[in-house]
Length: 360
Image (cartoon, rainbow, N blue to C red; front, side):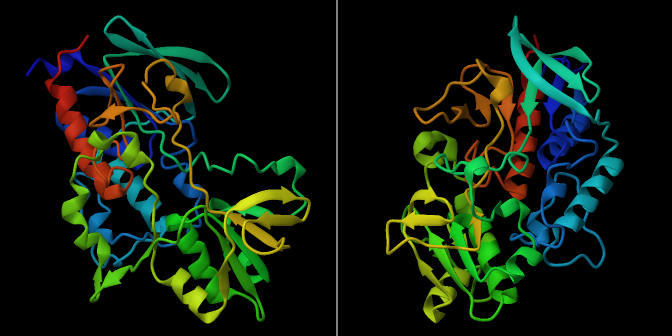
């Protein structure tokens, strides 16, 4: 192994992935600089409803070196997760430069130059032998390409910004999209919805719902082994796999008549939404559970991309620019890569890989 002192790693983003990378590199004696665009660590996670609980058990939601807390709940809320990340930073002695945005990363020789800009607009550069991109997804919610927010005449929100107060008054809810976010919104709406209300679920493909528990066991425990498979080898085929709705909320709502499937949206027209199934809908709230976008615009020129624009990686590492790693990216290494448990494992692997590589 070459001398770790000759390396310096730029880590972009101080959410779970960035903090995990910093802790692992520090344990190996590899120098690094961790920058965060927001004013504090886990800035993007603070946008999520703080009372919402994580879907995965607490025991599977720990970063490398994160100790279990006495009396911790079986499932953390996002408020508790943020507090835990703050404590993790202190315990691991991680230094963070907040209010610092990575505007662009470019190759220079065998290393990298990261162009930074602080909150006041001042620019500077950081030279690094390796770059770990940990910008995450929560800060970049995605909307349908055919939806024009400025022209919308209906009430709408992305699932990231939905709160109980919105759902309590949603008599006609249109939920666009599936996946974990859709399941969370629908389940909460079923609990707090007003009388005589109904929902429509708009999906582009068939409904995929898996139970949260099988014989009383959380499915996250049962999926541990298949999650280890090297999903990156599947390339774009893995990235195109749909995310199922976790839990029984959707099937329960369909069975009781509280919700119905509306088919994919064909167009948004004023206060109406035209779908492929039935007549036009007039919802009083549209919730877009259409996912998030992993931010890579500052990495232009450093990533090979598939036909649909997805970065091509080899076990988290860019196929075009060796030494550039993406943490927290869906299927970046395994099927668990975008989740806390996968981020923890990937951070260990990436840190070891960097420590074993000859620096520029």
